[in-house]
Image (cartoon, rainbow, N blue to C red; front, top):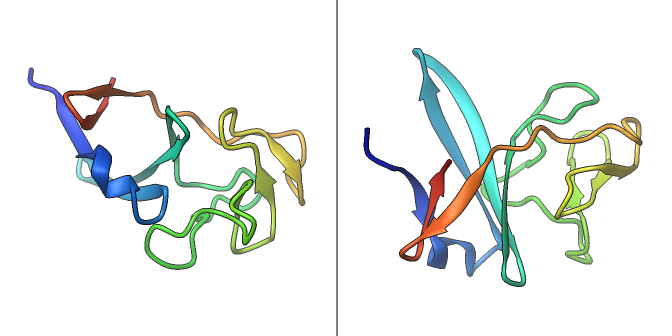
Length: 110
């Protein structure tokens, strides 16, 4: 089986994050990838508080300071590199990681 390319690394330049909706057995499976410095992380796009997507518009996953991942529905803030909720209604819970890696300037699912 070939690699599953999610996006190009350069796709993260504009916003620092990108949502990708995968097909898993005929069902929509939204994930997003985020870049912080040289680190790339992937998460399932679902807040642990209400199981709603974090973003309110395309590829918008950061708070205004760009210091945290942000749930637009309930204001929760998450650590970018660990996915742990630091503030909000799901404090102490974490985003579900979605393993990714960089391969020839492409972000691919592991």
